[in-house]
Image: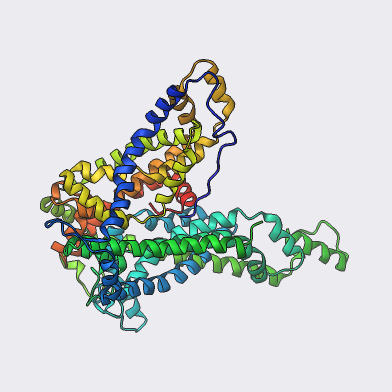
Length: 308
Length: 304
């Protein structure tokens, strides 16, 4: 998660005049206490527990057994894990470029002076706010090989549509298609906000110097948009690693395990096989992947991104 | 702008008087090019809008169809006899009213809890100086980076231990203490002018009065943003409710919907009616509070 912190100018400079220390601490406990207790119980404690749990074997019925790093070694030796990881990467490779290019195209269009933009924006954002379960069911229906709308429309072009979620070779593309549809408006909106933050003087100056549209886009707009573009890539990447809802509903990881993803593996191991330690270990591998992305973001951000 | 400049150069070259309108000075081919360009842009936008909207219309249309029209090889776009029978059928097979109320209740309570607890914590972080404040805030920020899948297994074990599996408190409480909410509100609270706070405390106001009467009204836009995002993410949430609910009486709409499709694999008219019910409230809310949805997501990069 990319976050920007800002500290208030006078923070930490002691309390207000004539205030007793004890009184102030009581106020702090009053304001912060409830949230801190909730956070500790439902977030921080589970995080620590998960770390410990990943070093143990526990099915909740028999007492937990300390196994050290066995869960991790078993994980890296498991073909199911590697295939889930592979499918997750396959999803990312298919999803990310498409959603970025289409989202950028739409953002550029919506940044023009055209009529009815409000309505277009409304339309593009509708899938974003809808529940994934409903959207996944909708796409499952749209992609029905026999009666689905998609194969009907493809058929109009004289092409026989694939079996989509019923075909092991097409299950991941089906999930990519649904995901692009749902997230397009989100990516578009973030990029549009970035485009609108670019001062007009730059493009006006370039136009006076005789730059054409393509040159303007390539030399002025995209470099100035790069911080936003970078942010969007990182956010989308982090979200993509956690892809689950649509997979669970659309394919359930099938057919023949062809679309099982990392989070699906975690869920299966925890709740179908009661391998809670193993599932925790896997969730930490997921965290490590996300952490690496975040580190790369920090490292690269300073280097090749243009700030005005 | 560019037209003006091109106009001037033309003028100089042809020695034309100034009263000629821009129209005559621009080369006709350029006008055509501009019209073509605009048409292409509209065309692209319309295609994209169709791509976004057509599936929704298909969902609506399917949900109003009689079974016979659903599975036809050449699709029926507008049902010949639109019927609400599918919605009624769902209501018969499921305690639909109960599930709907569950969803609304969970979303409302989660949102209210987030507003109260996050705003209080954010107030402490933004306005009351204390030792270790920055360190604690960094801990808060760090938790934002950890995916929810990491905590879900121990959380489930914790709920089992507390006997909270399949209860409302088990369903609601974990979503109530958002670190993101604290972060969002703190940013906004920091912008509250310190002079007002000092003036109020000279008048004898304590922290609670400053929080309730000054800072909260000041931060209304941020509170609205958090409400909208909190409500949406609670309403759409799937993974946690899937784990923690067992009986249909306690399920939220997305979870019930997922079970629905397992039961009626080929009755797409029923499944689509259920899907319509799951998205309509949020779509209505989005139409009413568009600004806050967009602002919240753009600011945070969260899809809720």
